[in-house]
Amino acid sequence: MTKLITEEQRAQLLANGRMSGTTEDFDPRPVVKLFTPNASATWLLTELNSEEIAFGLCDLGQGFPELGYVSLAELEALRGKWGLHIERDLYFVAGKRLSGYVREAR
Image (cartoon, rainbow, N blue to C red):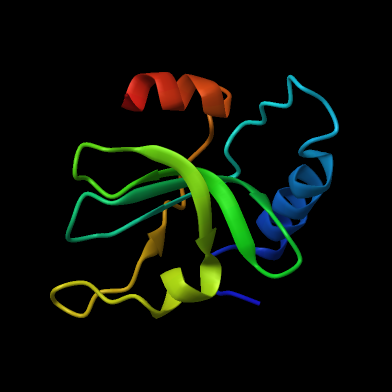
């Protein structure tokens, strides 16, 4: 298990992952926001599968945000220019569904 998310967040992400694909209009609120403290990369994650692969809005700060999958283990292993780890936004509360963040990012 990864240190990037709490047990509660992991449980919600897994529940969303089980719901994904069960209905056409499935559009959950992001559960967790991860970011690089010394760059502009951000991940708003909504779902997780049992292999620790998360789904959500991935914005690496290069002007091309996209919906996609990302390995939590790979995110945890990443280090920035100054050796800084990716962090979880401790105060993030989703104000809208994922589709709203996608529209805003694009």
